[in-house]
Length: 113
Image (tube, rainbow, N blue to C red; front, side, top):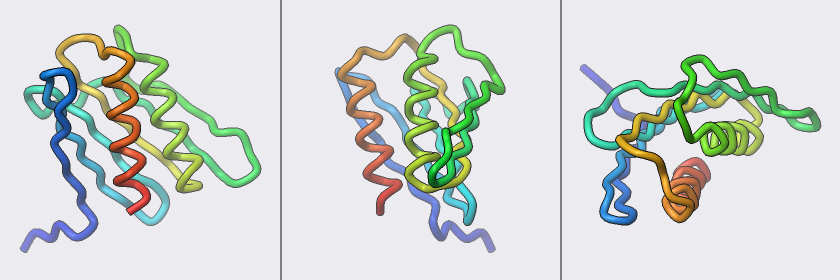
């Protein structure tokens, strides 16, 4: 039997583009995946945050673009949950600023639930 307790999934449409946001929570962190089109693991960033300390980030699979967005989401989630954030992004073309804002807000809303 497969359990999906805690698994969170939401489709977000921005500027006529459809993104699938998936979050798998763990006791010590979250795995976050944002994909456009096929569900693939894409660029991968890992951040570790803890109260009172600077958040550390490492790129596991480098991106051709969107590096600021990747780092920003991963670090914000890690510092919010005081844990580890593993963030994967697979998109078809570069994100516009308003798309970044909407996706960031959706991720943070899901994290806080």
